Amino acid sequence: MTQRAQPGPGRRTLLGAAAVLGTAGLASAGTAAGPAHAAERGRGSYRDLPVPTVIGHRGASGYRPEHTLGSYQLALDMGAHVIEQDLVPTKDGHLVCRHENDITGTTDVAGRPEFASRRTTKKVDGLSLTGWFTEDFTLAELKTLRATERIPGNRQENTVYDGRWEVPTFEEVLRWADREGRRRGAPVWLYVETKHPTYFRSLGLGLEEPLARLLRRYGRHRAGSPLLLQSFEPGSVRRLAKLVATPRVVLLSGPTERPWDFVESGDPRTVADLVTPAGLKWIASFAQGIGPTLDLVIPKDAAGRLTEPTTLVADAHARGLVLHPYTMRNENTFLPADFRRGTDPNAYGDVFGAFRAYFETGIDGIFSDNPDTALLAAADFGTR
Image: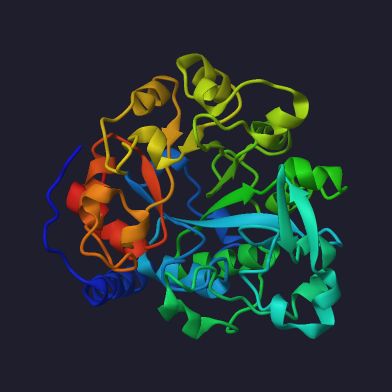
């Protein structure tokens, strides 16, 4: 697929438009007091979310260090329909929000001499990693650290916020969502991923049971709760299905890859097997959606340009599954080659053209580091 890049608004224009949208949303939300858990007010199906649904990937991680309350708040203020959290455990079993258990690049731990001896090498899902890991810290110790920008080479502007926020627990996020839900008069939707669940279960730090307890405590354990659960391991999704009725999504990576629980159990299936009609039918027996990488929706050629869409959207819809692919980012380096502008890899490309190409496939929503841009693109395309 080839599209000529068209001139579009720069970052300042996009942010300004989002601020207007966010302010308008706040003004209309109201501040009426509600029940103990705002999630209980206005409960409805995930199928009632706007389409395309805009999911704030790790919050508004294009503008703030990811998985911080600052990132989540900005995504909500911008108008994101759903806000994502990734969960990993601490040594003493608390669930905290980090994209990975390796916190070397997302906190200031490397500069903390009191934790220098914690640096170690581990094998996580078959990969050898050297750094600092959440499972080697108590929550009290982890709370002494401060969050930092994960990719400062791409997002130097975000480094101004380094050290501003701590690592939040998932319970703190649930409380934040309750407060914001009461203030706005509508529930705050969350999208929660279990990270490396087989690995953590092997350490005696299983994720699903403590997660389910928190969901029940905060009224987000029902089929109509404003929360979606997700994992790259189908076994984790199936385990959660036995614990709570909250809607569930299976994440899907590259076609030749195997979910790590499949590797551990000897299941020979790859992602390519799971996106066949038979594989999707199996997923639909315990989940309500899939979260495929965008390349499973529209593959790229050797030059990184989009080709023709696959049948994945139609095949998944035929089995009643929603599709929320990942991840759209504004910078050239993350865009398909046919939507890049100029030679600076960190400059913004023709992100609106890229969004339209993906929206035209019929996907139900999309993860984006830049919720403001995604919302404008969805408005251009026409939500339903």
